[in-house]
Image (cartoon, rainbow, N blue to C red):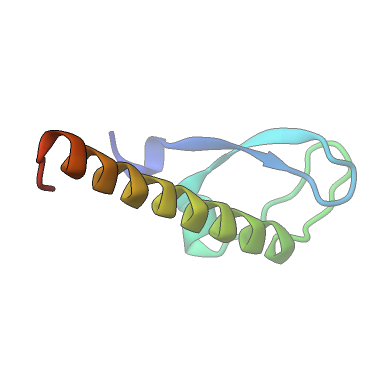
Length: 75
């Protein structure tokens, strides 16, 4: 799967409606416009997404450690 094909639910910072946005749009820094209220405040959501991705990464690292201890798997 190419990055251009990956879509996420993007919550509007103003009206809270979620709508589909391509990850490549976020990475390229394009302006995301809410189809409901036309809000364009992307920076707030990018910070939230970055924080959540870091938390996901930490969870994956912890899972790898547990698997390594339990099954002696190396990644």
